[in-house]
Image 1: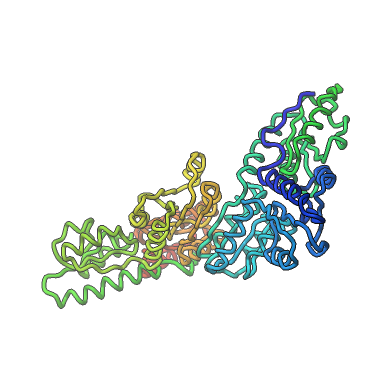
Image 2: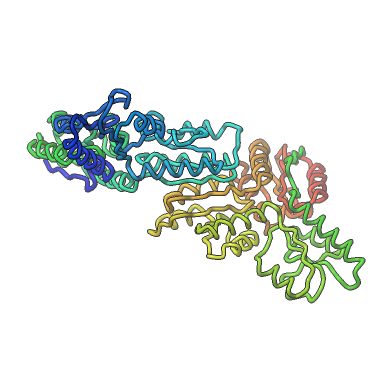
Length: 289
Length: 289
């Protein structure tokens, strides 16, 4: 079985940076007695990586309140300002590994809010990145996650002076493009910040090209990873035999029967060694034809 | 023949205001010896109105340089700042009847330019309003008039930091909506001002509803009038028997054969008396069936 791996598969810049920062903190913590390293939520949406980090001594916790002391790493998604404040108040040592692109969105939203813009976040309501961004819109905001929701919003009679619009870093560009025209008639001025991460955009574009020319597509990534789900949706449209897996153990030989070429892409939270393991496994499969 | 006239047919607020200002100036000029009233370009795109104004003593000229003294009325479309300056330098008495909505676009473009935004005007290159707006973009601008042009622009590799986007007051909302998604990926920030005149929007929406329910649509207006052409395009899509006329003399009885209900709309430069004359003429026609 021939396997083609998409150029931009796996860890993105922000995730590499967050893991590096966590490991550096771990190095520092070893000098301090009794200070462990905790991440607020899993650092990446990948159980294997989380397990590896736990072995090293970096633990994921759900809330800052569950620890009394130690280093608290804010993951790439960022978080609400009040979480920082509370952690600092409780004397935790906060390490901010918020992706710089997400941090930029926080700054944009804060600026827009203080200049009287009503905020719209185009993104997925339940995603931690979106929740974090929303927390910076101190006068409130509206989250729109689909064309249907945008249509509903467009039908509301309310028109405002100034709308400030940002978009989740891993949102699909085509959906962003489809939503915007429905918003521009809702205000005299729409100030739109295209905050989709360029790495995400390139990854999506490359994945689409790859999916068009192979018989089967394997998308690697956590089931909770927003950017991985986007990749899956993109592939599924032009390659019906698309499968989402978290690791090599989920690969089933059956899928590859009668196929000649497999494509592989991976979400931003997939480490290189997981990709390599899967590639080896697929290469070992015959075409079965 | 039954005739339904669209509610918002004819002179818009800006045109009424410009004609009123010209006539008031005429009143003033009569007190001054040897000072006539001139408009820089026809005040409205309607030969009958222009003829009427000439009879009253208000003359249309192509360039300020063609007169040595007198009152110079700037029409609703507005004009370039250098035209004002030259006219004032030459001691002409300038009366600014630029539509306040167009004046607002001038201010927006000037502000955006001085804040480092690259300017895009969505509108028709040859229209005097667009030429006037462009003159306020002192660092240059790009005019985009169609979806095809926007597509070409989107394919250019150049990406800028900040785009400031305005739209010609009489541009079609649906085309504006179709163009915007192609621009949002060309800059980190797109500051979009929806400067389509709300009267134009309502007129277009009402015209569309009317065209859907009649057998024949008559669009009244000058052949050079941008907003009239938009009305014609809107009607033609859902009512194949759509005709553009400048006055009652262009109405042909043939068109109405076998039709029961006629709809009538008119561009912003059509006076009420022209509409009334046409309605009388159509009512006088039988269905001819």
